[in-house]
Image (spheres, rainbow, N blue to C red):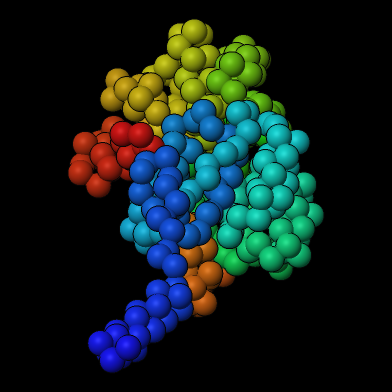
Length: 336
């Protein structure tokens, strides 16, 4: 037995180490990209998924996630910006999935309030971006363009190219959309206050949410006011596209001054051709970035501003080739 005396203590120590040491940690779960699974999942819900603007918001959201690390963006929204029920369904699905946070661009300033409250009760914070809710009490932050000032810029540019006199049409977008309602009110209030010799021919017609419905409504307005209208303002990309099509079909481009809102390849080309006198620009890349960044800061316990403004700008045929305007006219889009 003496020859084994030194063996047993060594064996006991070895056995103890084997029995008490923690099991090797499992390999990190793999994401679809092959890397470690993100530690936080942030849902980003746009108003729609087809317009150029939202593709750039998506790129900004992904940039913030990549910069922060350990974050996955779940991007999902209704196909059409008129589908309130579809957006509600997406919101409810993310609440059920217990995501870490939700960034929402509400289609309706009232209809989404109960679901933001439901998310809060489930322990899921919400950042609102692009378009406000009427009740901000349950929000982390509101990230957006100053849309009212966007309307002010449009009014002043249209007045400039009209030499502060003439008859104009405002083509509205969709009832309940706070962002475009702010643009519309900013435009009308500025015209009434600063340019008394400009008359508003029509300000109560809604285009609907697609270029097709916007084209139809624009044609109706141009036929009705053909001999009177000198200028038009369309308040977002789809109804600007529809209005451009109507002006072209009616042979009124360059005769009727036109201010659009948000760029697209077709609208940019039209401005280069002199068919559009100005495009009010937002910074959708910054908007998506700041919305996700605000959420991540909140989840980390950092202070977050209640309102984060992302800027508004006026592109014209004269300044559209300047580097800063080019960045805003051609913002990065998701997948590029």
